Length: 440
Ligand SMILES: [Zn+2]
Image 1 (cartoon, protein in one colour):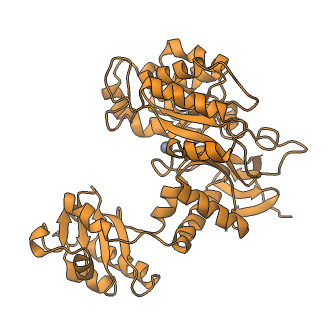
Image 2 (image 1 turned 45 degrees about the horizontal axis):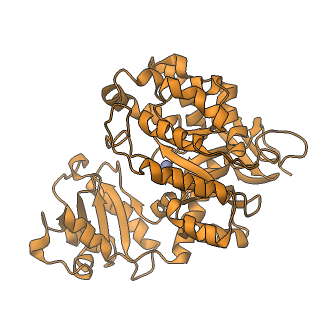
Image 3 (image 1 turned 30 degrees about the vertical axis):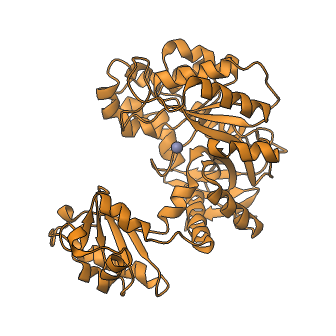
């Protein structure tokens, strides 16, 4: 039992994020937005103090042009000292350069003439240098994963759907066996693993209420930011040809595995719906999902519901993408990030964050879906009401994992998964009646 003051919501449930990337981030030192060279080196020093003696020190995000004290290019000897002699590689904010310590330069087999300014490498050499960094051990990876899960509980989440490779799934199993999985995790695996799942006979829902396997993630297009979203006007970059997509969806359905179809542009969304339409058979938990659905042609909105297609959307993307959408999707923003028309047509919405691409906070996501559009003056008619947004972050996400009889509402017979909030944010989270985080 526990006592906290606040308003209890059904546990918030993120329907699309990437725990593997979040875990890996915890294994590297984040130097973004550190204002000085001195503070950057101090942060490296503190990070090094937590590492074994010979471990690699890996980091990212430094930006010398922003350093107020000394914006000159960094030097390897500074890093030798700060990293305690360890091999260290720190990628610049733009990803095009890396700052190396002397032992990293040696370990990577680089010579002076490979380098850009002293102590840094540029462009292709960054990848060469990165290749000498050893993969994290299982124990290291689990440590990063545990930290990622704790951080999600602190943001108010009690369940997540994650899109990850088997490396992450193995980690979830180890943590679960040790009783160290503080959230309910639903794993969606890459289409590359479908053949293995078919051979074994894994079906959607295998696992338990803490860790389960659900869907097969496949990409139909790229993204708005990289100009690879597949649009009806013929621009963008289709990834999966239609015949292969139809075959994939058919195999998944036959194997009783759900599909999570990444489709961002209106062209990719239409192809996803076409592929689902070509399928005759449905089984009890056939709950195909279209991931992102950032631009849906109005003619396609009414097609979701009859197909049982779930719209798995991340409202926070609209906040981040607004300017580029105005530029790239001019004339189409009236039906982009169109949560409201989909909700009104009776489609099940499942909201998430796509973290670490965007901020994981569900409270930010709810704000983005509800009042942000009015504040921003950007197609406010596409915003949803607060109850609709909450439902998408609770019951909708639970439905999208086949767990609506166990999660997503506060009702007798369901798990006591709670997110307790007040005017300042998340007060506490509880999973199955047990406190998983509380504000100090
Ligand atoms: Zn994603």
